[in-house]
Image (cartoon, rainbow, N blue to C red):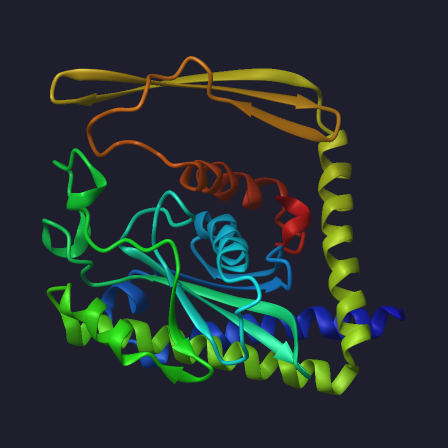
Length: 304
């Protein structure tokens, strides 16, 4: 592929995500979204691998990728153009229940070719405390509505039974409805812009660009790691909750072009609301490392 076409498509992919973020903010009336910027929008390939990370909290890029993959596994053979799936279960992909993901397939001529995904921290999720933060929680059942994946929009039509049931469980149904509608609009824009890109350059060209983009990101990051000295570094932190002390141990090993993170030695799971799921842990590692090591590298599956 010639470098000019590659560069144009690469920048168009970023603009797809950027315009979707603008749509999300324009439709949403939430201060959490517009002023707190607690959101994320990104594009994924047909198999759920991260294609283009967008504006928002980096912690959620790996989680949203798993959300896409989880929906693919859960609804395999039953994913249609115009569908939108809702997910917020922390043990499936989300960071906590208040972070609601909407993931939507992108079909081109009847074939699934990509996914768009977004999340916002909703105004309320029906937890014990307003807003969803429950520092005194001792189980997830006090943290509100939780779904490993449910179809909110089917073939372009909102499932009113699902929407109404969800809104009936929260304290601020009007604001939460606006949150959900803003994410639906966001995914609609991402889909339309992605399809316009494919129509202009052809699916094969866009697909080849996506593969090359991911491969180049991985090559650049591995090359940068090889420039750094091998070694091992350790960190120990403590948390105090109701006079109980919890330890977090982390050993980072840098070996050639790989980084290995080992949490062995950390305290066992707590009965308090301080536990970190697999996806929250991965996001917590990814978010500080990406701007440090990948400041000039496209954010996609190649750097994860």
